[in-house]
Image (tube, rainbow, N blue to C red; front, side, top):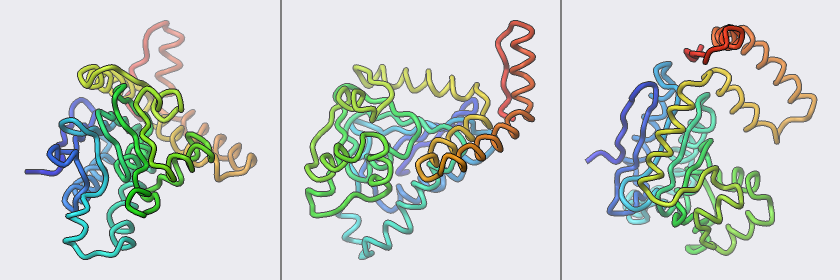
Length: 257
C-alpha cells in the first residue's frame, strides 16, 4: 500500500497521507513519496496543492519504531528527509492548503505549519510533542511557530506539549478556518482549492515568497523585492486579463501565466 495517495484534478494536486492505522505517522516511504509528490507539484499543470490525512488524524509525527529500525542518526534523518520536504513546500510558488482532520503532532504539526493555508476541525489537536520524549522541535517548527503565535506562546507550546484544539488554534492564528466536522473540512478544502486554482498563480507564488521572507529582510530589501515582483506581475498575461475584465465588467479568467 502506498504511504500517500495523490490525484491531480483541474489543476489541483490532492495529497493524502495514507497510514491511518498509525494516525499517518511518518516512515521512510511516506517521506520519500511526499518529496516526489511535491516535485510533481512544480509542474505547470499544478496551480494549487491540498494536503490532509486519511482516517481520524492528520499526522502523529515520526513513527518511532520505523526510525529505530533504520539505525539513522537524528541529524541524518532530518537533513535527508524532513528538511528537504519542508523547503519544497515553503519554496513552492503555489498555495498549499492543509486540512487538519485530527491530531497534528511533532513533525506532523511542523508539516502543517509549513503550508500556506490551514483548515482544521474544532476537535483537531495540534501538539508540539517533542519534549515528551526529550527532544526539541524540528522540521521547521522553531521557525514557523514563533512567527505565527509569537515567542512566548511558541515557547509555551514547545516546552509543555500542551494540546491546542482546532477552535483554540483559530483564535491563535495557527489555522485560517475552523469547521465542525471532517465532512465540512473536505468541503472547505474543495472550496478553497478551487478558488486558489482559478487565481493568478504567478502573483500568488510571489506573494508567498514575499511574505515568507519578510522577517529576514530589511525594509529597504522588502521594498526592492516588492518592486521587482510587481514588475514581473505587471507584465503577465494574468494582469492583462485582470485589467480587461475590469474594463469589460466581467469576471477574469486567469490562466496562471
